[in-house]
Length: 471
Ligand SMILES: C[S@@+](CC[C@H](N)C(=O)[O-])C[C@H]1O[C@@H](n2cnc3c(N)ncnc32)[C@H](O)[C@@H]1O
Image (tube, rainbow, N blue to C red):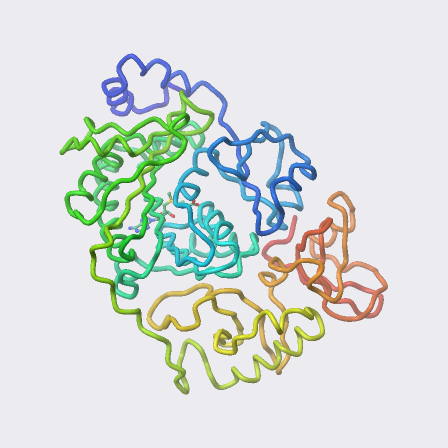
């Protein structure tokens, strides 16, 4: 594939890499590495290693990351539909890992779709604290939301906003921010040859300018003492060392801090930026000829504590007739939830015990990880855990809820092994003949929830979402 590479790209890389260039360009003739990251919200690493139908080789810089062999089809396995793992290229696993989000923190993933890094950040939060996963493009934001749902994330809000509009709403609000920036994608040429077609020297410049704007917004949203990880999947110095050099000139309240895994990640190149600050050597480059993954760049920035803290963002007021969270009917919706939970999920009423956290949008009931926040005027796709649809004072549970539940939390389960033909029929949307107690039933693959069924009259009626059904 070397001959497909744009000459402006290869000439620049030859000049930058000098004697290393031959090894770099030879890597384009090597096979791509395929990765999956185990989702600890659903299964822990050791258990998955025992269950895995694929042979797995650990990724050194990501505790839950593995490479799987060519020919394995983990995206076509029921464990994928159950959210046990996320398919992610090995180098792409580095950025969220480096952010080191801690349970209970407030974290923003500013350029989040399709959700590889958001699902990884959500796993680090362990269901505690708040993740805002934002994506500027509406169609991609929906895919992001579906991926967070599949991975059983209860505490994420998905927004579809520009960084600037979020900045106005959330000044100095986040403990940690990931900026996985839109970039010219040179590091993906081997994996996605279509990225070659979309590349041009002008795109590199446009992406650099966009990155500076996005980073400015991220800087404004970070608390004093907070951390930003900036990442790209390109080799262009303009989008990497230069974006960092420009950012640091504009924001003297930030400094670069060291990244882990120096044995795998090569240092950034100060001499590829202006000014050529030595600090830039603390950023990292993941080179495809030096590790088993694609090309990436990483930088970790810390904001000084000597910055005035911000006023808290606007709080939500319980207004009668408010558009976003219709209070009329909210009490009835909560009552519908409580009666559903008492029957189907005995522990839920004591776990979801904050009445202020229930938000009703039309017929859709959510449990919010940040009930105090006002979302009016922000495009929100999901405001936390979607509990279900309330119709005629009855709650129909959501697919998202099923995927956050474990077998010991629910009153009734229907369990199938991964290779049981009945499971395949369920995933295709068929009803199953089955005798059991009547009511909402959590369908499982082995021990892991995969969706809802409703048992009645010797049948398990199918409630697997139409859009997700296997063909
Ligand atoms: C590298 S991708 C993100 C990948 C994602 N973090 C993941 O791990 O799955 C960059 C994202 O930035 C979005 N984007 C494009 N222009 C943007 C802008 N001006 N501001 C914020 N995000 C933008 C793109 O739509 C794209 O989804």
